[in-house]
Image (tube, one colour):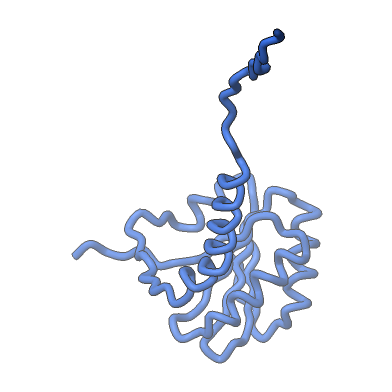
Length: 148
């Protein structure tokens, strides 16, 4: 009489990753949906500087320095190498002038400054146009705060 012998199965210890993938996809969707709400309405208190250096120290003797100023009415002015400020200049003229100065001296540094009452959008517009013109680095002018 033949006896029945069941086949011996090999035991394998594998992790079933399908539930893990399902959980990760659900978490990914939750984070993608909630992330836009987390970054809205951030209050910013901009710092004041006490370690700012004068523009003459930053420019040094070997490079020129261009300053673009925006007054509270939004009118633009430009000064090259600490010469007298030219007022009422258009933004396109400023971009052309800066590009020409940088072709003569590629180490020319550019800084943008605005009156306290100047609209932030005016300053951003100038920075955007300078960036589009290929000016790699533009500084922002500030007054040095006295510790009194």
